[in-house]
Image (cartoon, rainbow, N blue to C red; front, side, top):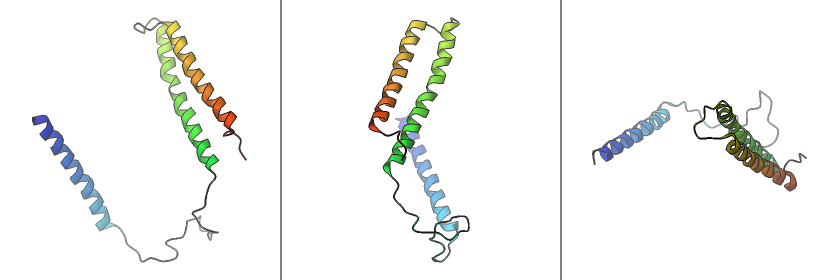
Length: 127
């Protein structure tokens, strides 16, 4: 029961701290009157052309998400290679090299199937 009291007290202090920071920022922030220049998009001292809120094609977002997906999955290869190096040197506990080959094959196979799927859907075609 004592641990629940500590968790509740910590949550209460966190809420007070976060709420106090937001309230303090609201009270101390600079306020200027609304004007046309305040609501304009900033474009390096150039006069804005058109509205700042335009529609982008969904393909840009899908391409960016695909980039992030493959980028993050490629980061998983670094720990795998570290374990593979340790297994080759005999330093990895009960992990055999054959097991690592199988796991890396399946990992690369899933990446390759995802790439083929995106290629087949035409996501990688830049217009």
